[in-house]
Image (cartoon, rainbow, N blue to C red; front, side, top):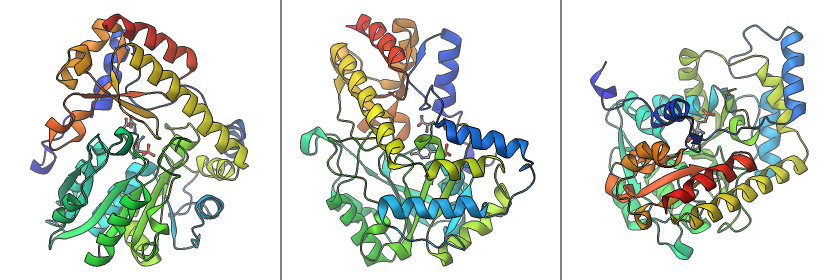
Length: 387
Ligand code: PMP
Ligand code: GLN
């Protein structure tokens, strides 16, 4: 194995999901829903499969899907994109992130990201021979929310900085970046001529009590022309196994991403593309019910975790909530999560693995609430044994 990949072992999601299978524990670790997405979408996939959409589609994605992606982001976020040249279909958000970093970073370039960060960011930065510069999100901002120090953000930027990688709504914390925080990021990008890469896979999972609605960074002044915006069907349409994602952005940047993408996967699953196009065009009601259902699941899990004795941190969006294990006598989240199936029959994910400065998250674990009500209820019953 090449030196730059040696620090990366098996992903924590694979380890924890295997642990759940082995022990029969309730899996609130890896974030995937346990119900299917909209039936219109599933039906369209079957129709496409049976209808012969089974050979290589066009490299940037089928025209119907690129048009649907552009229309969706216009409808919800007011962002205009030309489906020809400013929209690219990828193998999930994961490929979009990897292809973007590989396309835009020379070896030795630096990427600012916020820790805890999604695990593939660190690996993609390393694959490119680039260097990550994490800015730490800390609980204890207004309302106990995670926040960061704008001075730390400024200090992270140096002569080799090329990209700022921003994930909002944020996995694993459930944080939604506020307009003020987005403004700090945008100011830095403009002043230092940086490209922003935004991972917005949870764009439809911002809850009513969040600090504000979802705001794509690309909508801030001067940001559209320097932002690659990334999202995915996996979360919004409960089809994480489909791996259909996309990147949108100005043609000069996006064509660089396409250049790399061609040689990573060439194209993506043909029959799933018309189906995702159908899903993106569903009426607003679908998206509203999706958000409110997930908010109810969050409330159910937060109440249960609080009852079980965890120190629960605010979750404003995503599939996830983080919890402090110290009130239960824990100190190390990794040890805690490895023992949790034996102690309580539940699997969670330690957040320390998403930090460079692991001490900042050593006492925190992440629970996923994208599960059926009865599954969360069972998990909560089990977790009460810990107290
Ligand atoms: N980014 C974030 C923040 C995620 O949580 C995930 C996975 N759920 C991804 C990217 C990967 O998305 P995909 O499965 O579409 O590759
Ligand atoms: N994004 C999902 C999570 O954070 C898992 C994706 C994966 O397993 N790589 O749980």
